Length: 102
Picture 1 (spheres, rainbow, N blue to C red):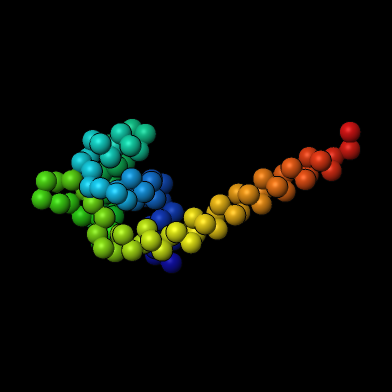
Picture 2 (picture 1 turned 180 degrees about the vertical axis):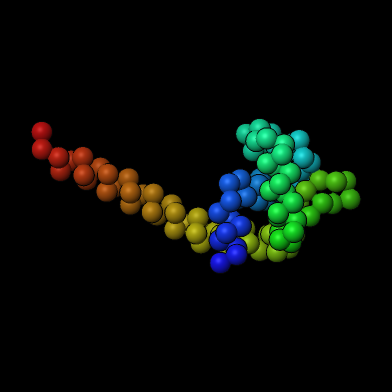
């Protein structure tokens, strides 16, 4: 359950997503995260480092650890499910609208 607690915190999944392809410095990461406050970003990065999902490289940029990359890989199934769910919700909403009396 600790993983769900961590992943449920605001911005955690976004940070992991933005680090998926390459290491990023603090400012570029902040910009990719829609300019979230520096204090919140620092707090989330600290939590991710303590959880061994993110580390800093030689240049000081943040990158996923092997555990972080593995977590991202494991979330692919959830991403596929969420796409199916969104499609079902959309279809269900369309059916509900069509079923309404005029």
